[in-house]
Amino acid sequence: METNSTTNPRAAVQDANERCQTNTDRVEYVGMRVDGTPVVLKLTEHERLTPDRSLDLVRHSPAGFDWGYVGSGPAQLACALLLDYYDDENVAHQHYIQFRNEVISQLACDGPADCWHLTGDDIEAALGEFQDHHALTPDGGGPSASLPANWSAVSRTDRTVFQRRDIDHYVVLAEGSEEWLIILCAQGDRAYPAPLDHRTRPVEANPAPAVQELIAESNDLVEPDEEAT
Image (cartoon, rainbow, N blue to C red; front, side, top):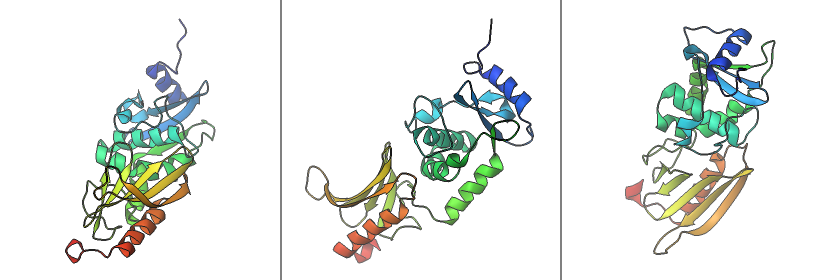
């Protein structure tokens, strides 16, 4: 019976071992297209990386992974790689969008082996750069070095929300298929938040400056409470 490497992880791993060289002393992922289907392998453990675990965290692309551009398939791959490597849902959820934008979107199957390689060292170096730049990321509700003292970033299942601590102002960061939608809104006594202002940015752009603009606008509209700062 003929073996299909797109559905048989062991066959895909064997095929990858013939096409790509790896150092078994380090964590290494390799991606390739098998009959047009994106396949990602964790070579150090001889297994195929699947979206299953990452789909419990974010659901950008239930159909599978992709790379080489900014989109839903690369977002799912970014989350899956970080989750697999760090085994930490908070780290994966905080950094996968920036990891997609900066790393996964740049991956390409090239060279004699017609595949890409990503090592644990590569992943750690990328996240180190993100942290050095103090990216705006959810941090469980605590103060962030990239936000004013009266604001906190919190993680929701489908989006990131930046919450003002002294009044009911929020900045909601939502990713669409082609652009970011960043909304400043106020809750107060209303049943639903009322939008005060918004920004849109291309999905490949860093949304942090727009978030900071709206946060500054809120602080200009209502001066922060001294106790909150």
